[in-house]
Image 1 (tube, one colour):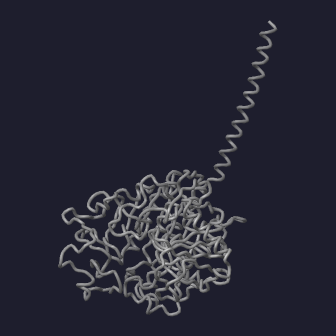
Image 2 (cartoon, one colour):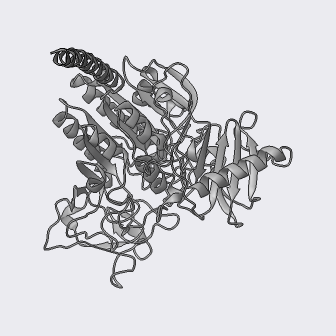
Length: 538
């Protein structure tokens, strides 16, 4: 009897304890969920990436030869960064790094992609799109791709163009498949060339298809825009390009219509997804060559077609902002405005960019531009706007497009798999302008692919490294010069932002420290905290 009573009392005690533990667990889980919901946010996200736009090319960054009111409005209503960077001074590697969160020199075939390049980012790679798709976002890329399409044999232009954006996290895409100075001049919708007539198949190759095939060399007198160097193969729309192609005439576009098409398709995507979170990568082709803006913009600036293309880009930004306002989405949309690299004037066509430059300084006060690791090559306009969330102002924090995957993963409370986004840092606080939030302490920059030209910025120090001891092209004071330099150069950006004076000899300890650090970052295979080092030889 006593034994039964004791067992009964113990059971009651244990039951009480279990009930208390269950209640505590319930409260703990509930608080965790509330905290997670408080931390995770799901604004719409639009990344607008200009092409070859320099730090000094827009009026909110000091341009006076033209006005960019819509980009200026972004800056006035958001955060304008004075140390905003892309990770490379050419398009393909920057786009690779922006999407994957990994320095392009770690990848294969990440230099400027040729017309028939296969997909550079392989299926299964974590990207900014796959991260946001996992968070419940509708995802789209509209505009210039230039990251290859198809399997290792290259694009099947008359069949399915896969793998491509849809295999790395995008729900839909509407693309210029390469870049417009390279063939072919067709749109790609998801996995196929748009409006392609099977009776007129598209062929793209590296060699002249026939002796009578019109090119910029053989039919130069027919061109409406002459070439200056390199862009003298197949002619389309009165402009000769890099590479050869035939057929696909019903699928070909007019250069003048590109910007309108990007806006049209972007507005469609936003309208279709206005009731749930979306991510749009708006990859403008402006102001890349051939610069052939729509007729309504031609002659609107004193800078020739290059300046006219800048105001066409500004119009695109305005159309996207107007769409958000019309759909009452502006206060729930984070916009990031950036560029894939710095400026270049003559990039293969005689479009008056040099002759009409006047006092305009495309890279602002910086030296260099596209193709170089000088500040003008990678420091670009960089603006974030999220109305009523980001306090308008100017930030000196060091941020980079490569950090957007990790930062947006943090925004949407998504975990990054251990081996993904190897160099992307969570700079969400800095991007949103939150008090006491800091940007990067250091950033590696490169020019193209993994050819051994690097720079590292750490604080106000900047070290250049040139592994190939040959002449390199440097844009200095808007003109292209061939210069031979030492393997290492050191600059103090606080005193010498134009990188005119090499102080490596005066500061040997700083030079050696940055040499070691750059070598370490390259060899360890990743710089994001928590990434397992992987030895890589370059």
